[in-house]
Length: 226
Image (cartoon, rainbow, N blue to C red; front, side, top):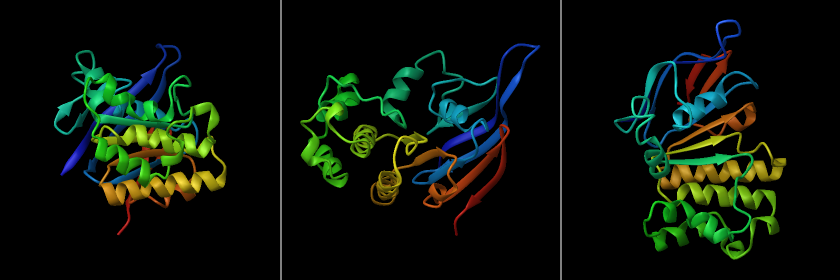
């Protein structure tokens, strides 16, 4: 069953004199529980694509449907509420709140949605990610690899339909990059989490069950592992 349907989306920037085509007639589906990597060099359109899939940006043509909800036609309606409840984000810049403890950073998406945190799931996540010993510390006091693990916990806590990760290893060394990719893979395999990750690194793409390669705003190849 497709949890995500991308139907002929195109995205341009600029005006008539200087039009830049970031996305050109992109179409694909993502099944529930899939781990998809969007692979491509800088400027290929992968970050723009993730922004569109995550409801952060809209398109000129086409539509994006997540679990039956058309985020394109509803972009100027209640997209913020849908995004907050259903999409988990991981970025290379972490975006943790320095004045909040690790624990409060993780809990924040649920609090903002005026919901109660599933305490058993919270404990399961922090144990799964091996961050039990840092939850009372603050972002400035933990290492980069730990910060990205906290970001993953923050994304997982609301049990999102999809986790979108834009170059999540971009600020990490090789050891921490390998570790966060291992954790993402485990989240996919053990928790059944659907993940869409953008990267320029072909080695990172090897962990995925499927790889879409983008060049100049178009899909060049779409390969699933057997």
